[in-house]
Amino acid sequence: MDDLFDAPAQPIPRDRWDRPLVIPPDGGKPKPYARCTTFVSALESHHTLTLWEKRMVALGLSERADLLLAVTAHRDDKRELNKICDQAKEAARASSAATTGTALHALTERVDRGQPLPALPESAADDLAAYTQATRNIEVVDIERFGVEDQLCVGGTWDRVFNIAGQYYIGDIKTGNIEAPAMKIAMQLAVYAHATPYDWTSGTRKPYDFTLNQERGVVVHLPAGTGTCQLHW
Image (cartoon, rainbow, N blue to C red; front, side):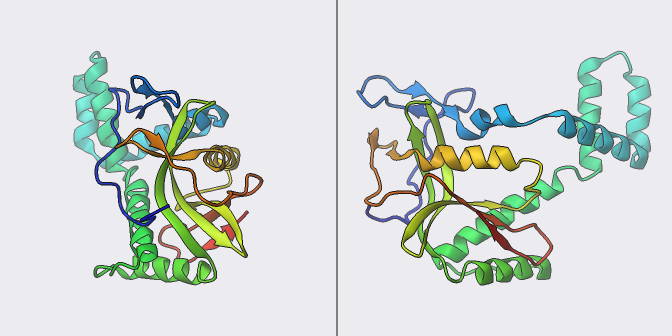
C-alpha cells in the first residue's frame, strides 16, 4: 500500500448510531456495519462496570454538598437525577483516566510517525519513554487503519501493524487494565487480523501486500502514569 502513514483526509461517514457506512463488496448503497468495539462487547460483563459507576456516584456526592441538596430537591425527577449522577461521577474524576489514556494514545501515534512531541508533564514523558524503549525492536508498518470484515459486517480501526522478525501482527495499545477485558481484547484483535483495509473515499478494499498473522496479536500495555510499558502476545 502507498502512504501507509498518511492520516485519513476525512472521517468515515457514519449513521446516527455512529455505525460506519460501508459499500458492500458487490457495490450498491452504503450499509451500516457494526463497530468492532460494539461487536466484541458481547464477551464483556457489565456487572463490574456498573458497580464501579455506583462507587463513583457515591464518592462524587460525598465531595459535593450542592449535589446532595440537588438530589433532595429533585428526588421525583428521573431526568434531573440522571444529570446529577453524571455530575457526581465527574466530581469523582471518573472520566480523568479515560481522558489521560486517549491523550497518551495520540502521543504514541506521534512517536511512531516520527513527529515532534510538545512539552509534556513528567509522568507523560516517562510513559512515552517507556513506550519507545519497549517497541524499539519492532517495525511499525501501519498506523490507525480502518478496515472491514465483510462476513461479520464489522468495521473498525486498528492501532498498528507490527513487523516482528518478518511476521506481521495487529498491534493494540492499551492504557488501562487488560486483565478483566482479556477475552474482549483477544476477540478485537482477531477481527482486525481477518479484516481488510477499506478506503471509504472510493468505497474500495485495499488488501495489504503481506499476510497478517491470524493466530496472534500484540498488546502494548502502557498504563498511564506508571512510566512502564510491556508487550503481550
